[in-house]
Length: 418
Image (cartoon, rainbow, N blue to C red; front, side, top):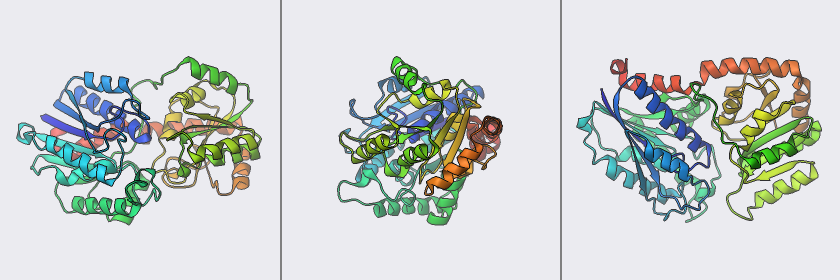
């Protein structure tokens, strides 16, 4: 079998600044592993958007790495922003899709047994409608969020655009998917699948549940700055740790309030979008008032370094209010630390990854006192060890990305993939 895969993503190919980038990087790695292991004749094209070299998230090492891969080609295209943003506004999304389609549609699909097009996130949603039709062509949009989940979107604050225009685009794309053969929407979790069905009327759905690359070691970069910060953190008898981008929906402020109530050192690690971002001042005030530690724009892998090396009891808090799927949960499970209690907010796609009191805790962070009382009950070694043991079973059974992606290939390629 001869296979062509066109994978498109605004993050994870020459940049890494968000969870979308994390999963896109994994897609690239796991696709190549599966196809190499099966000795399939394939070529992988990576499409992404131009990025100023001094922009948040640009990663030269990642760009060079993807350029160096065999059986892989990298295309960097314009979305009309002159490299100012790879996510962009709705006008940028249309331009990105049009420019990408021009290249994909020039490929001779008849040279391959199958062509698979994977369009990651809303900036590449419109591309689904532009790729030429062919009997051997399978095209899918992979929404990692939607306008109806994130009803506020910093990227749409310019050009007088609003979230309703994003929702209109997404509904238009899903209507197209529902009415066209070999065209799908890929759900990365149960929550977003149900959301797309109930709110957008999705019919043509396939799953690739988000997961971890369990076939290899858990790899994170370590450096002297991480060691310096860890030495400061390690002086605490216990900590509560949360991390994420500086956006309101991430709900990171609740970490400080919960830490204060528990009398446990609260630590928040975040990345700002621009100097003077107002929410950073809010975090600084909360950190001071609640004896917390706020770390801004520190090394990307600092949270993983802390989890790996901190050996006293700690709480890993995922406080987000609108997370479609919390990659953090399984990233932390991979460390197999029986001193880490995973606690998630009872919102969005977070609860689907936790069976309450079995492999973690689910709390309602709108009620800090109630949440603190529940955590106190289970913040003991025997409970933490038991929940970690169960977490490892969930990780193996449900969140092995290689197996989940393998099942996708079997679904769309059928007997030809056996």
